[in-house]
Length: 158
Image 1 (cartoon, rainbow, N blue to C red):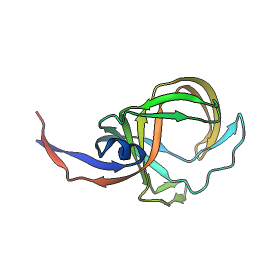
Image 2 (image 1 turned 135 degrees about the vertical axis):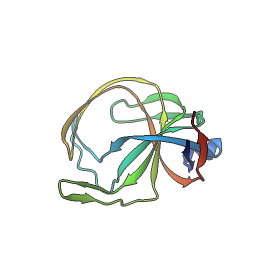
Image 3 (image 1 turned 90 degrees about the vertical axis):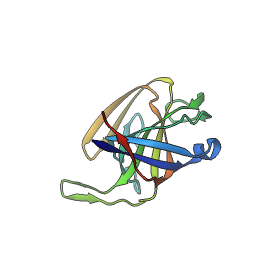
């Protein structure tokens, strides 16, 4: 029995520095939904953001240094962007009779591994209700990307 491997070529700010990035995709594992933050500081409900269905992804590490600044820590020291972990595609979503259509169907996210300890608690609210997120470490960095689906390869199973 043979299975097909899904592969994509992605272009983003890191692939421009490190060359073409080819990702091999696995099963889907996340749904990203626009969420407004309630505490420690209230933010308005985001508008113009898509929902994303994310797939496990494997590929070569970008090995690109970055420095991040966010609202929880003024400066996060320089980090190295590692291996890609997910490719996220924009999706149409229906929930409780409400439909959210893709607004940017060509815009994707690629999420890369990063390691950095943090200790931050964030409260938010989305279509599923209130959420409390304890951010023990920086999971990774997702960046806007475009993708090209490559021909599937047959892989013998055995």
